[in-house]
Length: 295
Image 1: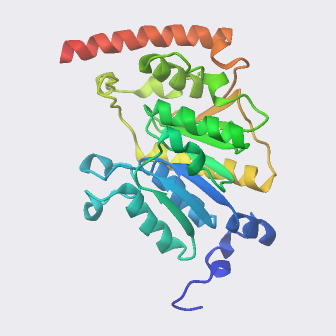
Image 2: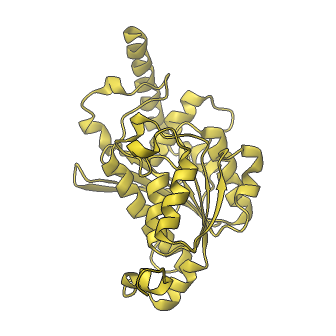
Image 3: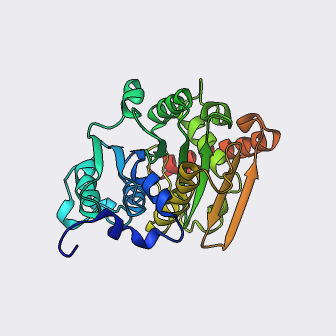
């Protein structure tokens, strides 16, 4: 169909790794993605190229110059434009027939259930420090029986966790209830990546500033996150392939050529995890002291 769009032709190169019937299932699926920044934008475009037919996306932010190093929608031509709006244009340029719902004011924790209406799977791409919104969306996924994936871009790799109706819940695993944001940051980071593979090659630790909620991030890590998340999505939506769900987590680090799987029954209560959290809190205090010395 020269000059026009045809779904079957557009995604024919998926067939072989997917059956025709499986491709049709992806076309009939809706995925929600909160956050259209570093990982969220590339999640959306990757899943669109798998032929997923419907998305619900959310982001209240606009692109700025500091996004150019890693965010799929960040171009000189899109600076100052709303992230959700830009990514909506990009995904429609891949699949003009896509069914797209946009929440351009982001995800309000009180409206998490509205955001997830009609959704088959949720992909977490919220800012690392968006703890209240993240808790609310994962809790709503749990109530609705919606599988959820979170993949953090760490160094030049990805730390991945999957939560399903049969796995530990997000709250049981991370234990955010009653914690301040510093403690949540430690629990989230150490929960996702108990092995902390990326720490060995962080060449300038002063670039991590938790008080300003800043840290380095690379396009390599964002692209790896998208690849592994899309793969987990395929397994969950099509019901084939082994899925390691919480309390399992895994981290792949391309820089160190390493894959580390971890199993933490009890989540944050696990004795090994408690040791890691104690060490993490000490490291956080040292980092905050360095930040204060540089301010």
